[in-house]
Image (cartoon, rainbow, N blue to C red):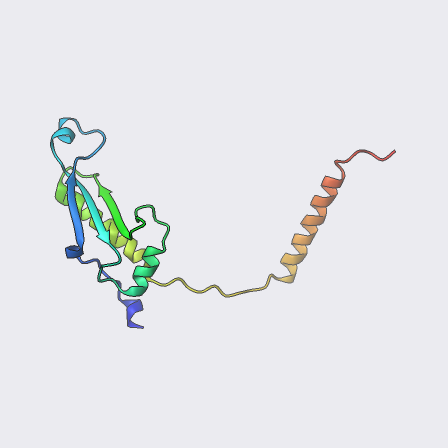
Length: 137
């Protein structure tokens, strides 16, 4: 039960950062300075709990490669340190999103009223479609 209360945190030592040039507007500063942060995080070799790893690897996130590496590019700030912090925060948000296991679905039956309403609407729709045919002579 303790793993449910504890949110796993990403160890910054397991994250690779590279400084790359940012895209978009910014004038000459964008052309001169490499202040965008390119983060790479290998999920399979990380120290995250195994259940969190499997949920993260099975997620349909486009930032996750086929090799199990999360790639995040942060370029919204003008300083490299702020972009590194933003990229790390986004990675932590990804981990937090899969940290809690999904609640299992409980099978339920539709109520009698909802079944009757569904059948009534089907019957009405059937009458509408039947009226579209050729008129009987």
